[in-house]
Amino acid sequence: MAKVAFLGLGVMGFPMAGHLAAKGHDVTVYNRTFAKAEAWVGAHGGRAAATPREAAVGQEVVFCCVGNDDDLRQVATGPDGAFAGMASGAIFVDHTTASAEIARELAGAAADLGVGFVDAPVSGGQAGAENGVLTVMCGGDAKTYAQVEPVIMSFARSCRLLGPAGSGQLAKMVNQVCIAGVVQGLSEGVQFGLNAGLDMEAVLDVISKGAAGSWQMENRGKTMVAGEFDFGFAVDWMRKDLDIVLAEARRNGSTMPLTALVDQFYAEVQTMGGGRWDTSSLFARLRR
Ligand code: NAP
Image 1: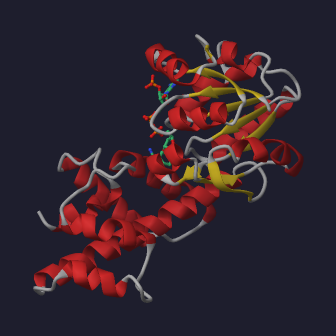
Image 2: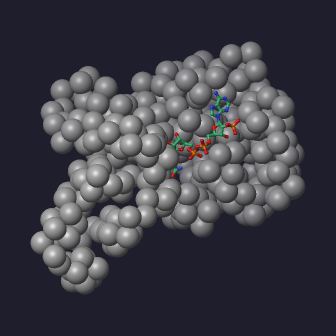
């Protein structure tokens, strides 16, 4: 069992840290809004620290799951950041969905301190975090990764090293690109079927077993038809992720017309008041 810290007890971090405690790891938590850290300790035991640095002192692994690049920089670096508290040989594992650039930047800063760094964004959403069945995409060196993989598996169903620092974030970008296109296609298919007068519940039952089937169709098709868009991963987060994707695409020379278009569709959903709706709300845009 490891001595660990978890920084950022949001929708994802709170249950992820809970699984670490449930597996018997010795967990210290930090959250910017301290009341959440106190609530976590009330539910799971362990300790709450006032700063990332204080949380990180004496830990073997420091986990982090905050919002974006700037948030990550704040909790990792700076006088009260986690790096300032970590000893040589400790490892920082970042579960934030962020850019590959910041992963490389922090991996370099960590290496200067003798600290390991693994970028490890997740897929599986709130339900995956609560049930401890996330998919984790990792970047880093093989030796560091091997040390943290068994601890990460406390809240994951699958975890894999995909290359050097930044590779986890790049893989997560591929994940988001694939989701964006599929959700728009599904939305158009459902709209077409309804306009054609079909019983779309029945149609989805049939076609989800064939070549058109997808996770989105299985899990979001019928909720789209019902006009329900409160199933987790929010449009505001998706826009943050697609922003990261499109910036990376400009750097690596990828042509992403569909992704860029769907990003603009999500911007329209935001102006409809749907920033907190789930990503299947592309359908709501078509039904306005
Ligand atoms: P969330 O509920 O908004 O939680 C964000 C956490 O980060 C909170 O604990 C927040 O603290 C903390 N934080 C934000 N900015 C900070 C800063 N500058 N300094 C210190 N702490 C800061 O978000 P979430 O849904 O857990 O998502 C976290 C990350 O996972 C994001 O990168 C997201 O894209 C990714 N992700 C989310 C999902 C999902 O379904 N939600 C799925 C996959 C990946 P406070 O409590 O003080 O606000």
